[in-house]
Length: 566
Image (tube, rainbow, N blue to C red):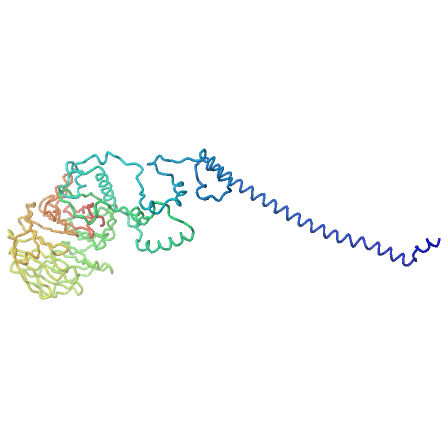
């Protein structure tokens, strides 16, 4: 009993022990719950990471399978650009199985495919790249063996570069045909790029390409030269500045210049504005008309009616600001293109001329020279429209022409002589006889002032070198005898390679002269077309258009294919 009694605790102590024993399990249970939550989070993160790794591996496997499938279908698309980054086993398998999956296309002159060239790019030296040249896919051997006589067939004569050229090779014949096609279909100006801007921007493009890792493929080192050719359709064989060949003139008939509003009377004046798009027409119906020339519609812009003046001549002032209009009257008109106003000027103070229908405007737009009575030439200022001086010939005045940018004036008339006047001193410094001329009726100087042409009432046109004529040589370079009636009109084109001569007394009496050879174009005037009675003619500033007014009230418009610009 004593032993048992010794182990029995007091009642209060026993109760305390029971409470401690009851509290101890709750503390341990709380620790166990916290540990279980941490383990669950770790397991969840681990499962997410494993799923993510599995998804990535699955995507990689799918991409690899797709590449293998594409390689098996289309050839080596991806293997060259990887440069051996795969595992050793994969690369070894590809080497063992590559012969069955990949092939080399050697059908085009034994050249490698584009992708295999890129794969072997790093293995080839720079010397081989420079010496290697791109070859055409196919070449016709018969072209070099074939010789074509372009002088024998009329329609092929236009392909000649020299007048006496006849036989050319087949390849040269093809290139000239291509150049002829490009000439007949001139380039579009809106498609032209600014070469300077393109050159400046190329440096930025190159730097950006280098930053992005872009590299030009082999064989495209001279990309700028290739782009310059591909970005234009200009002639590569025959240049627009080349000499015009004699014999046949290449031209085509366009829609009439005044098709929207034909004149009811003879056309006495046609002239292009300096911008080459505006055409002036005037005639005896007392109307001055303006057209926008494009060769297709030729839209009418404006029409001005002059009640008291049948127009004998109308002309733009060279600076393009106004139009001088004159008829068989004591006065003349000035039309301001900017203000759109018409001013009536005259009669001139101190003069009794009843007609001011013949006049010329100086190239510097400062002076208007009118043909007066009894051998007088009237000089009028274009600004003030007042008489500033007179010149006196021995005979009657019939025709005038300016030279040396308006500093000199040529005149001819009833005495058969050609006068040279210095407008700064108002004096005649040279006078010479026009060979074979009894009565001069027309004069014209070339744009550069080296040549001048003189026509007479007998239909003879003499072409002179001005320097030789002023030096005492009276013999003309060439005498044109293709007209049989009085010469009424002479006109050089912009580069003095064509001279137009006409007479309004005979139908189709209009000839075009090839000035370098002094021969007449044999296919002008056209045989199957009537020009009626030609009265006036003008070439556009670029030489591309030629407009001719006739007595029927029409303005015939032609395109000269040798000249690219209007």
